[in-house]
Length: 160
Image (cartoon, rainbow, N blue to C red):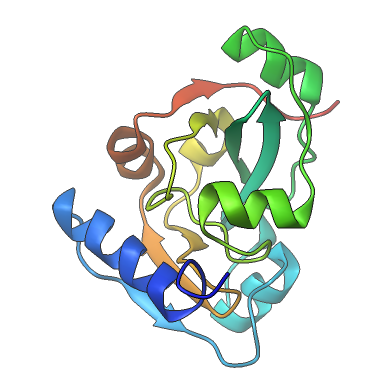
């Protein structure tokens, strides 16, 4: 799967950010940002400010839920918001469909266009940080800007 992860993944995210007229705010954290807790510790922000990407399957199409790092995503809420049945995706499928390894799935720059859902809770946080195509790269942004440039549907996705 070389060519769809690592440096090329970061390059795709950078190109997508610049195409959307978003500043290149990508930063590398060699210790890793694979989990929301790891990312928050490396960056020096709260776990809530990490915009994690949770990938589901809707048939052969990826559903990427951009969620606050403190929230567990409710699959039934995802299905209701998008009107499709979803199931968890395994790591190999995520890599082949998004072009990113789990821990580095970005909200944009995918190799195949996913359905996107944006956690309403992120809109209350400033700034937020999202994966930038590898498990050690993130980018800084504002939630409303990220929702706009991804075209994601905004919804309540938090598991109660």
